Length: 231
Image (cartoon, helix red, strand yellow):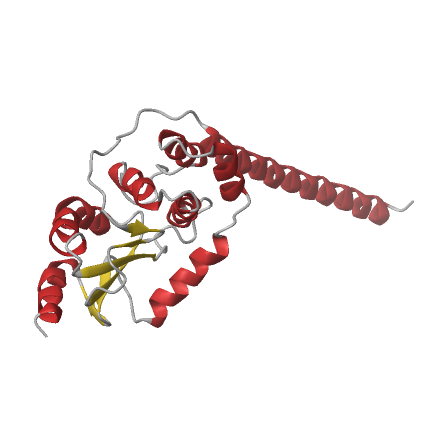
């Protein structure tokens, strides 16, 4: 074997070794990332807030109030949205008391889950999927209250699988049914469809509200309802 061939072969061996090293590094990195995701979703659940709130007298699935009410309101909200939490905490109780329970407003919640887009574990979408699963057992609103009461910012790892299951357990839902619903991603397509519906209505931010077809924000909601009632 000539000297040139020896050098060529050594070069090929060196390059093969380097390629193998790169592959092993990438594989190890991938294993670490997957492991971190798994550990995050299955980590133990700590204490969480259980809100003490009144719920609407008439509710069915993702709706509250009389379907024949003069004013139809649809809320578009992301479970990770700070403004949505503020509306829920400050304004919603009076909306329920003054308009929903009095039969003046029929209220629908429509998830618009976009804040977790691009994350390995999309907390917005996963929280919405879990809430739909709770709705199967007639506990959507109570489950939603637990999610919002424990909000801690966007993409902070608050709504892990274990936490979302713990909320269901706290509400005494049938856990076999809930877990199967959630882990099978039964409502993943529904979440996608809900996003498409929001976009088709011209919704670009949360919380947004459609009041008899007109888009308003939380600060405009009460006046918009009053305007419709006065017609």
